Image (cartoon, rainbow over all chains, first blue to last red; front, side, top):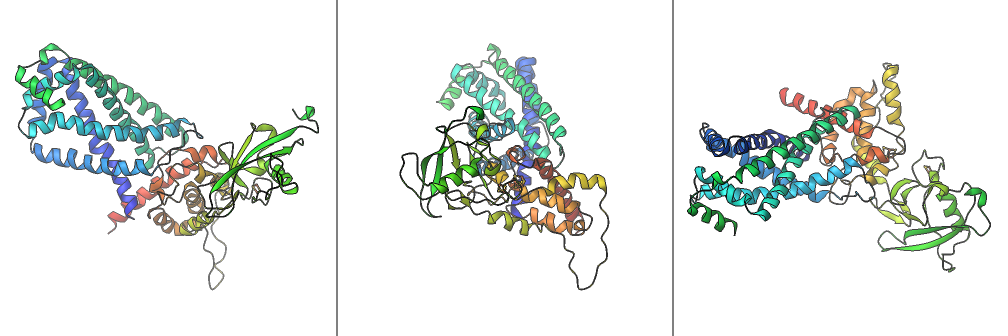
Length: 222
Length: 254
Ligand code: SF4
Ligand code: FES
């Protein structure tokens, strides 16, 4: 019985709350592109003004992320990918889902170390997040790595949503599964564009802050 | 091609062989005289008649399994040019040469191309893929099945437990205990039967055990590989729905 529930929970957590978090993260970051520094800061302050923010983070982000990530690595390990002999679109997505899962796992740890962890240990404040991001995305290599990480995360979410709909018996027939492919892949494209625009938004000079913060960003990165 | 066949024309094979369940596998090449309309089984029979490899050395004839020779028993499944399929239905004229033949390694290899598909029959037992009608007295006729339902259920009943879908599945391997697509589809078949339906929950619960339906990762190779065209992924999604409903029902009823 255990396997059934743990796998179902894995699938659920990927969409709720993690998928929801990814979307809210995208929206608040997109503010950096749309509203510049002011817009982004507004979003950061809004999120931090939520009641019981510590518990929200713990139960809606940290714990689900830990479970989904660790169990997901195990699922990825279990597959014997065979796209060589079975070169079909669904099978390729099956493989990419596992690859992007692993990349996202690494990316999320790296990204959280740069941002949330630095806040936790008191090196930076929420107000300096924009400057940290500016420091990262202004470096072309790090920018490229971030693009890879972001594309992995958005694909993994969008394609995972497609699989979620199958695994929970919502899209049953071939037509339903085909249409949900179009919708989910559309979601992947839209989310990727918005995230990348947000990252270009952070490149704007207005996010540049006092040298001290940049230095922290640099030591964090090195 | 067939018209131009001459006595000298031959068909090349590269066959993965294994002498015993524990021994290492190796490949051996064969050249078999071409005959119009021949298939992989008739080529293997030719090797049996004249067990010489491509180098002309006498060798042990290649072992294989087959019964019906018309793609209904599933015994002759093997991997031909990378794809698992029935050897008796694999026409030489339609295959690229040299023809590479391997056993379906997802299953334990007994010898050469013979594999042991017991795990599939074990899976059918696990999910109770039958309709219990035995009693100590005559139970009378069962309820009738609607014709509209019979039509799609018939498609599912074509499964010959050949194992091709398990071979094609990236999640059926030594790292998992996934029972594979065939048995899941059989649950849908027997749960659709008006008498079988009376034991529906038992089969759903069997699918919710370890190695059950949760092992599916939606690569959907099975539906493309099945020689009988069984809508395996629809069956799996339908069983996902049924087990999900069953899970909630059970939670709400305690
Ligand atoms: S479902 Fe198709 S591929 Fe799988 S065992 Fe049955 S007949 Fe073979
Ligand atoms: S011998 Fe029966 S399927 Fe080939």
